[in-house]
Amino acid sequence: MLLGTRPHIPTVNGNYTRLDLLSWTAGQVASSLLQISVAQALTDVILTSSSTQTTFIDCRGMSRIQHHAFDKVKSLLETTPCTLVFDHVSDSLADDLVTVLNGISVQHSPLGTSDRWLMFTTQPSLPTLDMDATRKTIADRLTSVVKTYAAASFHSFKDGGFKPLRSTPLKATGYFDGRAIVGTPTSLVWVVAAIADKIASELEQPSGVLHEILGKRQLRFLAVSRSGIALTAGLNWLVRSVQGMAFVDHFGPWQEVMEEHLDLNASRDVAYIYVGDFIIAGTEARVAQAYARSCNSDIVLATAIGAALPTEHYGFPFKLLTLVPPLPELVPAAKFRFGD
Image (cartoon, rainbow, N blue to C red):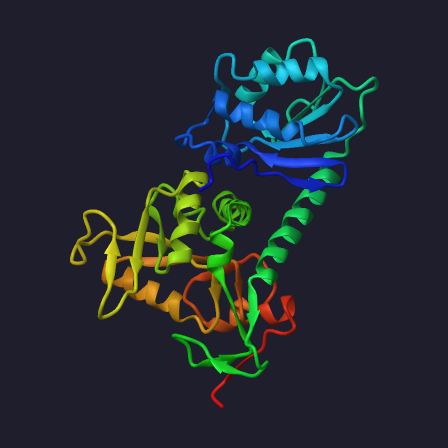
């Protein structure tokens, strides 16, 4: 479904893309090596920008370039006026970029900078770049894109009144359809990327709930719905610090556990990251917690596209991260209430 997708979003002065998403949608196995198929996909994205625009390329997850992978990129730079900004560049990838794009005018972040960037251009004059402002613009743009996808997934009931929702004690004026998001390649990849960034922040920050767990307990993703499974499959590709997935469909009297070597009686002490689409009353997340506890494990972090209530109102014993504001704020027509 994702093969052939070239994930990119327009920014103020060009396009933004991510090498990890290009690798995922090119059908590559998870790897830190930037391969030829990924470079070809990047060339296609560069061609969507005009000669006066800049292509911003997020390099997280990549550390080296396959031999001859960038031949077409260099040829494009040599024949077409354009500017490429590589951001979040590792030291080894920076060395490879300078080598393979030898002869192209380059500007880079100050030496010793922990989060490196490099700009290559064949424009007549070297563009000025405020990287902090650029990163903020891109982050704001990605947030806006995800909000648009989430809002577009809402469907009002025909009569405009309140109707019961499945698996919750709530009534609502409509429903948010996570399947519409995960069933469309463009929205799926960017929503997964946004969730991956939230999880990465929790892994990297000393105050993050996952930071102390990393290296001490096994981290795995857990999904208990079809939409959650689709999101988890992408996250398992992008977030390489998490070591596997557990899928449980319809946990209950007719449960179907989609996980190899399952042993509910084993002591596994797994730290799960729950992944869902939209949380309304919180039933699905609590079902996921019941599954985790049945495996002598627990959920340490939950992620979702959005939630009906402010995250702290659910009273979960784990932190909940969402991509958008409370759903009634995102879509004023979406209203929820208990009972009649």
